[in-house]
Image 1 (tube, rainbow, N blue to C red):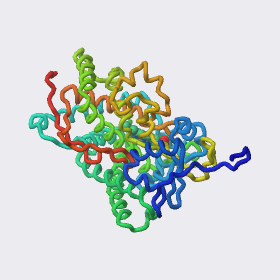
Image 2: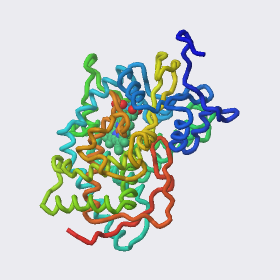
Image 3: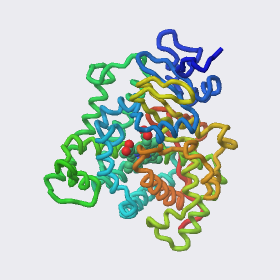
Length: 459
Ligand code: HEM
């Protein structure tokens, strides 16, 4: 029997496990789906064994808040971010401590309200170009994969925000590298034995090649701007002009590259996935789709020209996005590693444990949602939204490391949806297999093959 003096233990381990690679191996495939079963069996906090790695799943909103906010000083980014460092270097997503704080302070003004307002016209122009380019597809009625189309569109938008230029002819090349890197990083994370990045395994060699291609694109842009010597009102100029408060030094080329690459990747991959899932969900839920279309028609018929202020007024469009990110959170899990021993839920969390907070599980659990598998944007009406626990629904993370681009992403997605559904609807190819694949982000495993249909009502 336990006594008060009993030594605290680490969270329990599941009984089932791989004979060599431990219970962490249970997550190697479809981790997002396996996790809820494990939580049902072993409770809201449990350990998983992996060679040379401590892993704890913390599946209670209080635990997530504790790690991300209350005791965040004791936590750094987890193992998955080590995998991302080869690509992102020491940028905002992967850096730590005082260095991260300084960089975040420097980048923050680029995401202020006024900056976003300035970017709205560009987002409208880019989204409208995309809509115009759909005309021939709508006429032919052909089926095509909308996922790469969303990737290219969000790539153009994020590039123009950072560099004042699209990447136009390079968009395909870039998105192919990002897809590969997403897969490699996940494979490495799930591999029972992890080789250091410099070790010439076939995966490491391919990964380095993909990073090199992206590096060249980014460095060329930085060099060109330096040579031009003019300051623009974009993020690149802001970072180029920034000076260290103490030393007065500018950022090195490498640091600039890391920050630009981070925002470039983080601002594209997540948003493209969220958009693709939203098109899918709307195609499967004609009632919600119709309600959204009515809102769009009503406002646009009244002669509204989209701008920063009135985009926010498309309330139902926003609810559709919120609900879509509940069902398919692009960041489906978020993790931290403690620097000092800690205690969560009465259990000891040993130093350097990867504590994972399964966003997918929180977003799908019957414990927190009525009919969790149904797509119901009404959950996010202004009256109901305030009752949703901040750490039950957190697609953008939380605490000091909250996504810096959350308002940017929402604005961008609203504009794209409004302009696309003003003219068209999307229909999934009959029998097309839709399956989420939990890579670093949650992607549709086979893409999303749809056709675009002209709506009856035309502007
Ligand atoms: C639907 C779209 C998006 C989703 C779901 C998303 C999600 C997230 C999440 C969950 C985090 C926190 C990760 C952690 O705590 O470890 C994060 C961080 C970050 N995101 Fe996003 N994001 C989105 C769009 C964007 C956009 C558009 C940008 C840039 C324009 C961006 C840039 C960043 C950056 C730089 C960080 C690191 C912030 C820091 O640690 O200071 N994201 N994002």
